[in-house]
Amino acid sequence: MALTGLEIYKQLPKTNCKDCGFPTCLAFAMKMAAGQTSLDKCPHVSDEAKANLDSASRPPIQLVTIGTGDNEVKVGNETQLFRHEEKFYRPAAVAVRISDSLDDEALAGRAEAIGKLIFERVGTQIRVNLVAVCNESGDAAQFEKAAKLAAEKSGLACVLISASADNLGKAAAALSGQRPLLYISDPAQAEAAAAVAKDNGCPLAVKADGVEALAELTAKIVAAGVEEIVLDAGTRGLKATLESLTTIRRAALKGHRPLGYPTIAFTASDDPTSQAVEASSYVAKYAGVLVTDAAEPWQILPVLTTRQDIYIDPQKPVAVEPKLYAVGEVGAESPLLVTTNFSLSYYSVEGEVEASRVPAYILSVDTEGTSVLTAWASDKFNSETISQAMKTAGVEDKLSHRKVVIPGFVAVLSAGVEDESGWSVQIGPKEASGLPSYLKNQWQA
Ligand code: SF4
Image 1 (tube, rainbow, N blue to C red):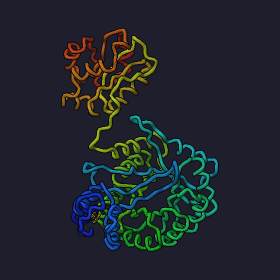
Image 2 (cartoon, rainbow, N blue to C red; image 1 turned 180 degrees about the vertical axis):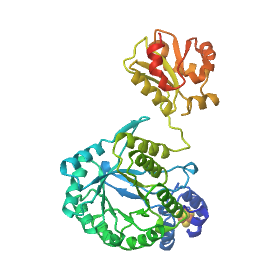
Image 3 (cartoon, helix red, strand yellow; image 1 turned 45 degrees about the vertical axis):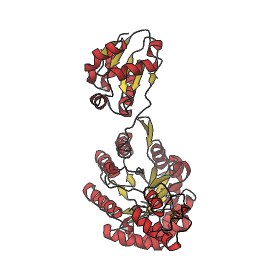
Image 4 (tube, rainbow, N blue to C red; image 1 turned 180 degrees about the horizontal axis):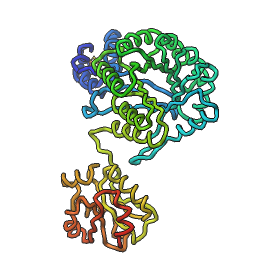
């Protein structure tokens, strides 16, 4: 848990010497508690106090790094149980499973497809992060070959899953320098796997039979010299897994060090739809790494969408730059559509305009990133702000007509916009999904 200013102050020399740039030790402690300075700015703190503060100020959930370079994913370092209390920081790494029992051609094809699970949503690229290679064959050479092929064909960092510490060691050595996450599925081999993880400089995921057994196991793994640990309480199925993920997160945030690590969750259903539901649920609460068989785009997109929505800052609306956007080969006769600068509103409109193949201007009005109805209710989307945005964007110089389309939900603004701007107002559809039909059948310059 984060330390309070007073807890930090107790460990400081209390001489108020000002060498840290602050007038008193208390002022320094308060700034440090707020994360605005660091302990190394005080040259007089004792080694004992430093050790105490270092250990007490360690994040409640260990940061774990998987992969390297462009493929690097970091999980952990979370500080909240409930997102609205601050935010969640490190999006769950999504891994799609691949068996080493597949023949080379099938394995390479699946790995390539996994590497292409990339989507564009609200102006951001969202994608699968990892390929999880499962040692179902039990054979070391086959596992090693599959790990190399999966990493090469997917272009992603790996999770290596095996019940054998020896097999993990061989596959990890084959991916030397790529920092895969090693997952040992046999608790009896966890300490041997810790030695492998240490030798190869890899993080280690351990499985145990329940949360209590897991807490006992992590102490042994740390003693073996591995600090970057990922936890699996061995539960499978939606209810039991959500319970164990929640129990581990709650205990970690209360300062229970043996459970202060990110978690890994596996989808267990054979049903393709249920896999997507399970995966989305674990991403929401509280998996650090998710492993799933769901590899179809229709299964993965909702998982990645859930992750994107959960890991944005709830205090900051996601906004696009408020300005005039041109979609397609616009001309002087093109329609002018008005919306707000809430990302989801803007990109919904943009997507439907693209789908309609009718080139159009979209004027995104600055509503501080709020949606059409929210902005209208808070008087940020009104006849003045719309008319002013039209002037600022210089729409008069770009268009030969004088017609502006406002969202159907704010039809009530039409008279005000006409008075304020001098343009004729047309009422568009309430939902962006109605735009293609509107633009093709109703819009006239
Ligand atoms: Fe206190 Fe250290 Fe700052 Fe001096 S340098 S005022 S001892 S915190």
